[in-house]
Image 1 (cartoon, rainbow, N blue to C red):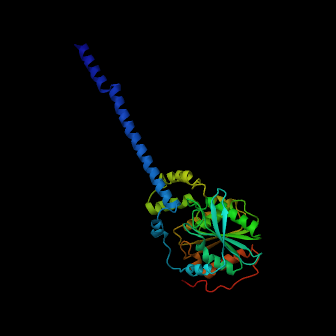
Image 2: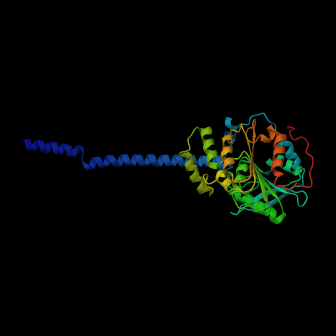
Length: 352
């Protein structure tokens, strides 16, 4: 009888914990976990694709980005850009086309003066175009500079399916500078950029530039594309960097062929040898003011820093126009021969 009970006990034990029943449960759990992981990866990939299209292409409406409270200006400054665009249309500009190293046809606008006058290459910001730099073109032209305003790749009339955030654009700026030396016999060249354009000229500063590039001015550029998107992801969607930004990084590598981590002005300025003026508005919350200090400290070149207390993003020239332009041309005067031909300007701070 004892033997029978023992056998019954063992039978019950084997039935409860049998390999077949236990294995079926494990497979079901593993399958469910696998499906969940695949679903999560698919959702992350989809979200990364959305964030890529939103931020790095011109295919999606960006009103959500620009309308966000932290991306708004201070409202204390008025722009002269409308009047300056009218002025630019009346000037004898010439269109030039240049092929990038990866085969894109890039467009630029030239505004010439006398042969031998210095040149400035003006780099516009995120989702902008060459004509958005009309106010800078006018001030520099009045001061005797010849002007080149390129459309960044993926902007204006330039080819490109993505926004480069300054990284592939840095090589385009090197080519534009080489073009001026080769075709226009430029003897002195200044690089100036605002916002993404500021990051572009900083990234270009770490490349092998023509010897004729003698000074750089950056206004409110970011430390890196990764840092800027990390900040915007948090402010716009209240999300951490992981996993969305990491998936967007992979998506960017596949679709655009560059890395958000690699797109670093902070690393590039450590290789810079060209004198650089750093400008930033203290109330900037689009490209946070806190990005200025690490950039300035990392720059391994003759450098100056100009902070405009009441300016938001890209507002320094409007918040303190007289001081702004005086500071720029005083800095450039140390490295650029004074142009022989200048034109008096009419009302730098007059709003339109």
